[in-house]
Image 1 (cartoon, rainbow, N blue to C red):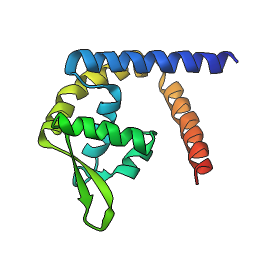
Image 2: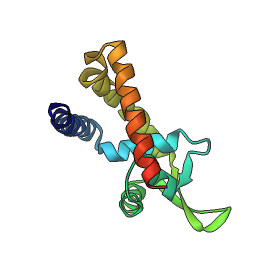
Image 3: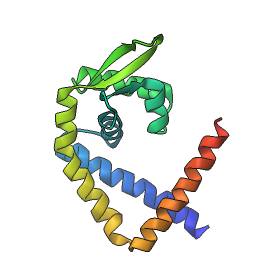
Image 4: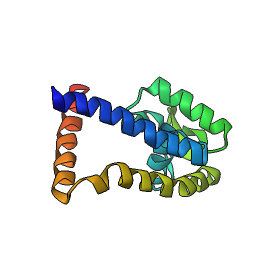
Length: 143
């Protein structure tokens, strides 16, 4: 029970802290930052909305609203999928890439300060293995 409660409290506090650091320093939410990162990692800086939702562990509806808001801010564009007229792609704009590049040091410093530097190399490896297992399990339930 202690492990579970500490995880719930620690994860919430960590997400809140990382969110506030990005919001205060760059006007981005942690969720916005994650979307920008996922798109930046794609060869054409674009991906299907459904895949983006899966990658950020969010609902398609929530990601759709988030992308629409980010599009109004000039960070992203929505485009029809050329291979499939029904699909929609989210695409990172140059403005979005600049926002990511500006915010990334703040986020990386926060992750290091609030997690990585608090753990030994062995503890980092255990943490990675535990969450690999949890993610694999939960994704298998969704088919």
